[in-house]
Image (tube, rainbow, N blue to C red; front, side, top):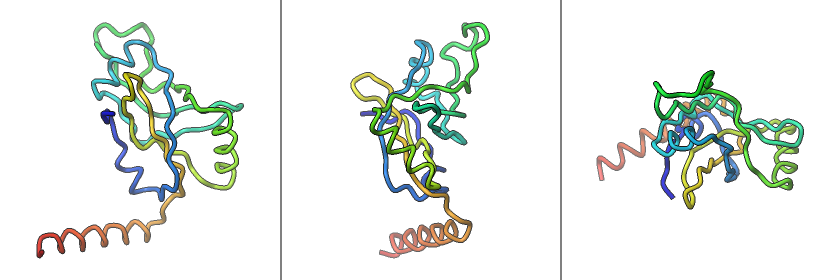
Length: 144
């Protein structure tokens, strides 16, 4: 299970309580490009509409930019493959104020999967606390 792309900012901006694995519907050249790590999750999110989950704002650059299909949109909305029960559960959680954020993209048995994190947005003071904690841990490692 190799990690192809990671959204590090998501772990900093959100308190992620639960994670889910979902498949992503991609075209052939998008799959090749994603497996080469040319996928950008920064600023993307997942939404549930009409009983289906979608990935919004993620960018997959073309495998061969000069040979891209006509009208190819790198940031198009892509469908996520989740079970009906998971979508129903997530819909309830999203209505209660939580957010569904893509955390990382990885391969599993030659399939491209995305890890979604269900979490709450951190406030500015919470982010400062995380930074302070990280710095103190770093200083303790240097001293020890």
